Image 1: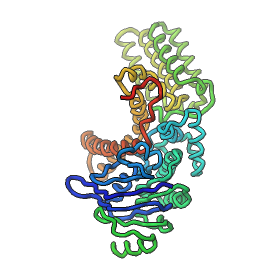
Image 2 (image 1 turned 135 degrees about the vertical axis):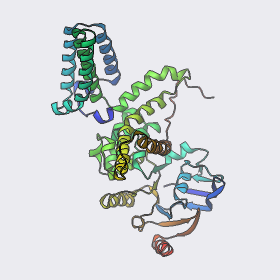
Image 3 (image 1 turned 45 degrees about the vertical axis):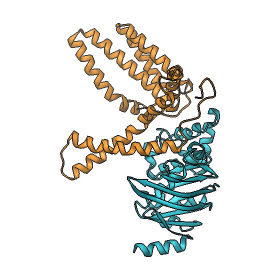
Length: 226
Length: 210
């Protein structure tokens, strides 16, 4: 599990502040991030593995600056995007899992076994030779997760992981989230999947307006949005 | 496209290295164009069909995949036969079908990643002298394989949405939103590739550190 630290972070876009976090440390096993559309949830996640660079301040993962050493940080922090279709880059599932492994320098001879291990972990080894574009939305999301878990990250960031999924697949993703040994930081509108988390942040217009346990944060957030 | 055609298996063709298969396919193509006589071309087509049969593909699947090319080849055969001479038309038809069938057999039995490795290897000499980035070329080819079916799906969705609003078929009305979608997705895909620690570390050999 990694320790993620935000120090006086400001992100500006087109001359206006889109995210501002003076001081934040994330070290719990499961952290939820909620907030309205455009509140800065995705930006916050993207700062953690260096996909977005702060205008001011810095974000570190285990002391490593995500903006300065994104490659090092990305070996420790995996990212699950909202649309798994854009995350799967190879036409065959097992080959896609191997893509990330190759990128972190895993020997060619070890790739098939590690890919199968990652798929087995999520109970989707039967998808190994399937064509990516023929999978269902839920299967794609699980394949995207397997691809990230194969790289053995300490932390996994999830950007709206249940968006567009049916109830069955949404519950599968929720169960996977709750069973993960890795640290999970999840940005979502689906408050039902994060109620058992350790901590919840609520963002509004680029600022953290709540930081507490999920039960009370969900109640306060729902009251605010009523 | 390979992504939609590759079938898993353990046949002889599956076990052969992708480089050998592609090399043999190139050689086969050169030989096919070295003759105009129908007998060697017919033998070549028979060999291609045997190769295809050895992959374990069902007749129904083969028919489904080869019907489209067959029509095009039949047209070319007819046109050549009428415009040049009948035997030349037969030679063109046999040659193209032999090549298409052999290519199909190779595609069926070769994983995309293996094909990409060959592509990467082929471009490596140019990579070494700084003319191209072979890993980027291989990834680009993979993305083409991966996203053509996605784009076809997206085009269908756009077409259905337009039809639901009473718009007749209009190529421009289809292309504009499709291009917007492609550009928007391209950003997300680039982010996703970055997030998966791309590019891979450079091999320790020969590459100079600036």
